[in-house]
Image (cartoon, rainbow, N blue to C red; front, side, top):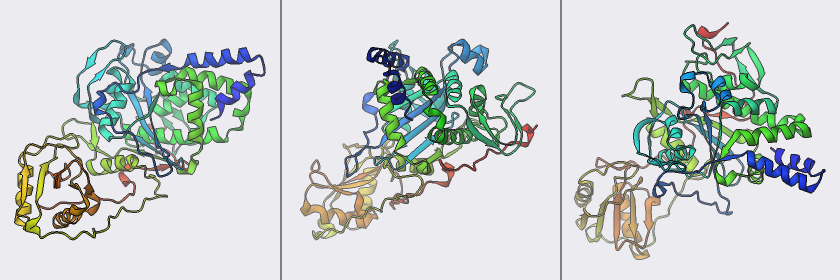
Length: 490
């Protein structure tokens, strides 16, 4: 993690001019691209600072399958795809908590069907139209990594601060520079079929330190791990990443100046980043932030998924579980469960409520939230529901269409807080969703995307435990071992 500072210190033992020139040389190695090339108005809101003024950090890690060089083509195979648009076959969102006590990683299977927003290639100016039910890894070929970032923000509503991308040859070179990464299989494995499928990975049962081409094979193996799907491959990638982090932190050989210089050269040549990480100094600052997180507080997860009902072999986000995992990351809640936030409670107002039939309630249709089309007549239906409960002054506002993910009740001043809470109680809406906002003239109920039908409001689950379907893996787990499909045992 300290490679850049150490290398520079060694080099400065020569002339300061030579040290500066080498620093500039390393900066010149780093490739840069735009962070987000989607529509700026669709960007997720920036992460909020905690009480101490600290802000979470979200970095999208990408593995490109580009065959844009002789080396990448050789490593990637598939001669017929040389110089075709690259795909992001590995996508991991790395979330560092605001207080830097924990880190969460969320992978998305490359076969996931998502909505990709409109993206504009920063180099050619070409505009790629928005697409629905598209493979998430196709986003990279629509103008670059900035489109993958835009796709993630649209899917998760998580603001992404940076991205880092590496290609086939970069993975090989980095694994060599590190000196190998220990991985484990529970049986002898040979990822190869008579029809040419498989990564070519061949390992004996137990733990092996993989580097170079073998490391790339591990990361690309699908045929041979568990059920031969991209889901199993994602699990293997998590094991590799955890092991690599432990290796970097524990390997004393990285204090060798020569090895560090090689690592500096390799890392800067391997990476494509956004401008915010585009110098050695900025990468070093990032490494200092990452280093603050203990290994045992790193949690690797896979986005909860289910098979698509329309496209065979493809997957889609599992509605409740995926939404919950994204919420936990968005709200900076640790996925290892070690610092669960206390449930938010809102005390009952001391302002007495008027009689139900005296409370004027304006009902708005906000069911277009969460990217959905508004439910026609929803404001009228809920105002009728309120009238049936005794709130005879409830009225639908058919002109206001404020899309919200969550139903809220707004009130403009303290003298209406009691009235607003009375409406919430009658409908079963938590007091935490009753908010004082000066842009309304009276008690205003905005029916959100979480209440698109029915007469009974179901409050969102405020349980902050990570869904079991996310397959969480702790960064300090040294016993993790990939299960080998018996058909690939040699």
